[in-house]
Length: 68
Image 1 (spheres, rainbow, N blue to C red):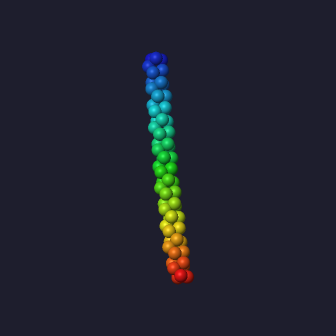
Image 2: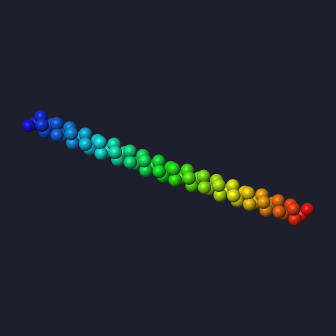
Image 3: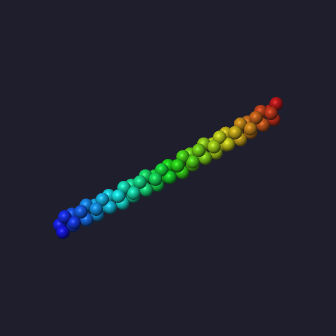
């Protein structure tokens, strides 16, 4: 009976460790999702800056043309 209980205890520990491993993977995946969102937002920010800069260039050209 003690041997069976020992086996049960080991199996219980293994089950807990498996759950912990799954939870750790889920946390890592959640972090990766957040990082992916951050990367997309960074790209969006860069693109927004590029659009603003393009508008400024167009406006500068228009000013130069107006002066000419």
